[in-house]
Length: 230
Length: 246
Ligand code: SF4
Ligand code: FES
Image (cartoon, rainbow over all chains, first blue to last red; front, top):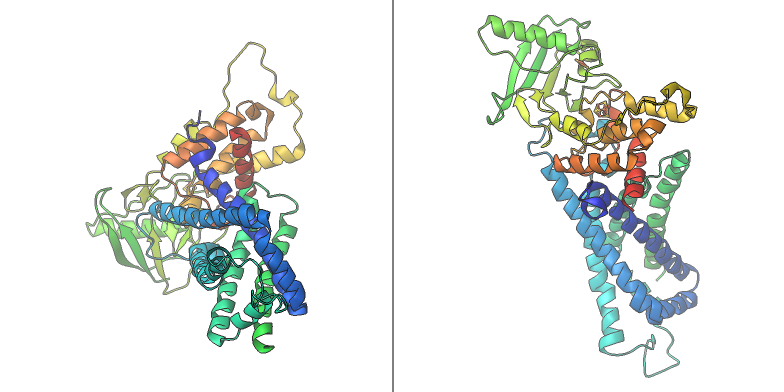
């Protein structure tokens, strides 16, 4: 009988990669749904942000799970890359990868690294200041001026402010291009890893491509919208 | 045709090996790739040089022995063929052709283009069979009804010739396509279902022990496989493995 089982076999690794990917893709969709409201109504965006930022379940249950999911997906991605490089010690003198597979599928580690770089920036830029305001300074009010209840919620204004500098907007858009490339392979790959390859696969593939293009394009649209409408 | 061949030469498994260049003349476009190499080797022997070692047996796409990485693709640029079925008309006069062994840690090089693929045998021994415990009243296999789809899929999986092109071509040197074909050909049929759980667990376990990489679903194996073994088999194996483990 197998001594490896579900914990450390190669199939276990790909399944765990797929499960964390599903979770992250769902999170991305939810993140997009909130961000896109900022295009239509600053007030709605403010209220949703205040809810997300102060709700107990989201802050203390969902947020830690999300961080775990992100860290797990990256760490496992690196482990796989290292193991897979080790599985071929001498490289081919001539290798024609594009004859049989997509660029995206062969370069998940690079698109992944670009996304990682973006997430690190996003943490420094947004998440750490947010933690500082809420938990170090203890300001849970979400107000522009915590001393003045009439000053209104701060999130929409902060969002607009983030998209002023062209370099930041450029980096942001580029990161989402890499995310699109990552998803173009990742979306369907996750289904294949879970063992789903059947009559629906072709339709799912098209849906996956649409998701991989539309969601990142949507994020890019939001960034450009605020950049040019500020 | 006149060609320039860049061939991997390696005396034995301990040698470092390197690419050597050989010009060949008088190659007919009707020759198979292996016949072209025969011509090269005849010339080398006539000059007192050591001929290029390569694996081959049936020369008709059945045995899976011929294993070459030609111009960056397993079994060369053609689709659905083994190296022995590849014809020189797929190349042009004056071409430079790279010929390398199938490379993977699980396929150590024996000499030149010959690699040791016994890892596949060990995976097969770990569970790629149906135990026949003769009880004296064994049922006639033909008397068991099998859905047409299952029979077709099992047959398709069974056409895998164990050549290793899937491993050679995979950027991760993963053996999932081969193993999934061997798992599927049994697990789809009633005779194989009895041991299905044990089979998939043990074969995957052995595959991992042999040092093959992790599948990342690039799909390159399916494209380069001379028998068109489908990725559906890998999905089936993933399902079976999950079912067997939980
Ligand atoms: S799956 Fe295809 S490429 Fe892999 S060993 Fe079998 S026949 Fe060869
Ligand atoms: S020599 Fe048998 S398949 Fe090519």
